[in-house]
View 1: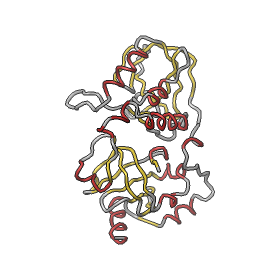
View 2: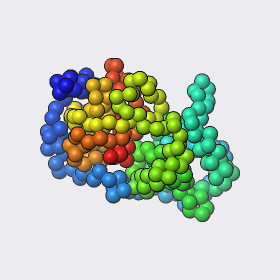
View 3: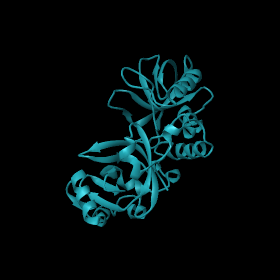
View 4: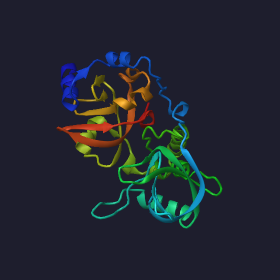
Length: 268
């Protein structure tokens, strides 16, 4: 089994090396703790102007009166139907909530450290005239899951805490069978698509030149990119632990790989 796992890791991401070597290489770098509540409050850039929301595309994207398309930071809402894509459970509910809350209403922005995404959308936290944090409210009401993309770490702790509360209370998506966790052993048969929750035991922690893999099985691993590794603290602490991981699963050479960017996506 150990030999097979090593071969799998080298197949997924070549030039493997020991995890201890990688940790020695970053010994002098600041290492964040595993608990997202205690790290990740890098400030966003506030904009004191209020601009009117002219259109709501879905639960996490809006259009402002100045023509900017805004992607809400730190969260992900289910997709709505568009083109040939089938809508996901909870997508229309999130859009309806955001429409009622923001359409034709003024908002101010706190723009992320990384200011735009590859679609050209402005990345921001939104606040209304009552200073309600809209991103946070979507999570607190179970309309969105947390999705932290470093270096945009502002409000990561608050978002993670709100998600935990909504999940415990079975609000919104957290009561929907479509988002129930899937055992790692059943992933291949489940054919997961979109955002997925997977539960299993981490059997190996292996560094590569591209980052670190947390290996669950012969067919499934979580990958952490090198630039994000310091956020996760002592990665060997995950070894032999049963955890839930959240994100998008991709096929790579016949294997299933989930890219995880922030500790909030791994639940013990």
